[in-house]
Image 1: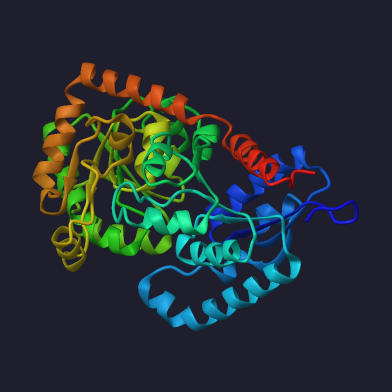
Image 2: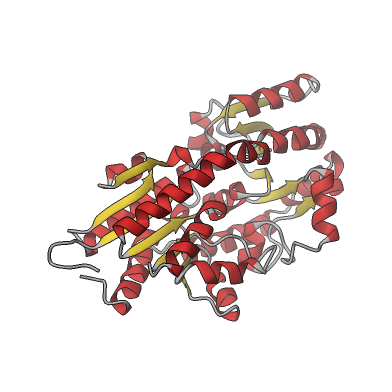
Length: 390
């Protein structure tokens, strides 16, 4: 318990770069409410810059991919046991798990059972697939902080306390930046209509989507010769994969850019984009899009067979809007001719694009809430209820 000699103590656990950024902003917002509080746990540079006491660096938890997770599983389990023991020794007034549900939810559940108040920041996509996970989250967290406005109602139906904070990306991404400025920055023709290719951030995604996106671009180049093309890749490895695919299609003139996805989106009139976080970024930048995705065949078969996906849409803009604003071409539909046809329909329909951009602008405003301040306020209410806000 907080006493005159012991400050309010809040433990946070962030295992990913995005979680570290969220944690840094959250600590700064909480410190405005609790200037003498102590913040400690697992985090990275952003959290340390906000005055965080790091017991372990967040990179200790940053493992992606099934094979990598299995290889590091014994170490991760040892770390979680050591972290739980440290939490029992320190008895913080609150534990906040930031995203990383595979690691954090189990830790939160054990901490909650031991009498520590727990918060999970960033809801997993339980509303889209594997909805039974909501009950598990409810057993782990006293409060779930949600980035999307429809999520608290879903949790309420499951008997789980949840509050909407807004999305931190909406706070920092400028809506509808000038396309000609972005084109100049990327050494593109500032006056030429532009189509962006965004095949994903993972090598598996790029290897599956590069060929159909290039085929679609080749077709569009023939039917719409006024277009220029630019591709955004996350890193050197994914960039090399796309360049190899482009080498097999020398007729396509396409600029390849690494690490500047938001600029590429801003430069475009239309984005051909892999389903995922990039679709939300396109919405926030206010650019129409065609959403494509291909899973590994075994994964797609299993998801279909078990009916794991519950949402009528897969793309976040469509889920948020409750209507089809971005065409979705999944699995076998994600082929060159169908992608090109969907793209051409949008390029040739200025009224349709204007409606989409109007809806995207409204959605951006609904997500721009000063997420860190809203999260801090929700946490403050929980602490006050527990008599631990001083």
